[in-house]
Length: 71
Length: 270
Image 1 (cartoon, each protein chain N blue to C red):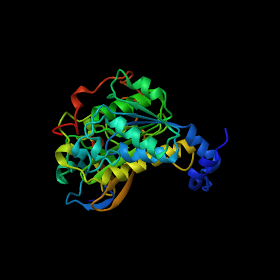
Image 2: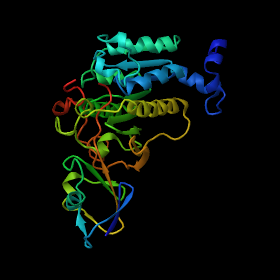
Image 3: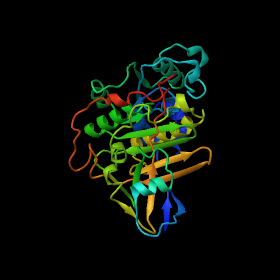
Image 4: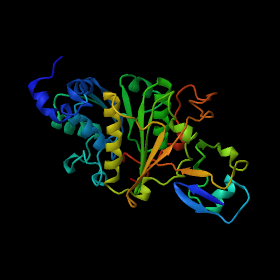
């Protein structure tokens, strides 16, 4: 299936729907335990990562914590 | 009050802009902005807001200037090492623009002091280095209905978003809870390219100025990310999250609390 991931096209071998948790594994996303996921414009609850699925044509954003600033 | 001759000269390049003009410059002079953090992000923010003639600028930080700060915290000079950052910053701001008021709050923000602090200002800027402060600032601003600018940097990457409480997504809409302590690398552990806070801080200062002027479109409902290595900006639309613990449909956070598990980010191993 073809997705748009963080603004770039991404092709996955899987054709059927994939859970968001599986997608994080498949794409080897950094900070997997803390990353926020936006699927087609909606922020997902972390508890929905197993249940929510991505399908061909979906848009996914991984949003990362960035802390620094002062010191 | 009319602008003086000196003010008309000092702010002439602002006054020439139709989005600013004399009226807009007076709005800036009447504006009150609180900068939390007098470090990498806070440096350009404080310098530019002072130069712009934002009339009252608060700056909060309890830290002292360290030699390792000087690679990026451009408001502090070598001779300032050991000095309170807020006092070092105040000196430079008043040297640029003696007609503004700078209020130095030599303290860390906590659940006990932040509500009283933000109450006195029109717009708040998060220039902090740790998630405890970032979540606390978000919560205090959302509960008080104060617009604020979030900013974060690490290595070569940065992110910023302006939060208009009640109208646009807040920090917790994206990140409901802070990461566990030490889960995310800090600038002091992972490094930060010195120019990075200059870019992000200047964007945050721009938002404060636009907010005071009422000009243009704020960076609300959009997370702007910046990659210095790829020299690329991206904008990610972010909707209000109905499950957000503070601004969602059934908020679970109704009072301020310190996120003690997330206290340190960049203040480790300094």
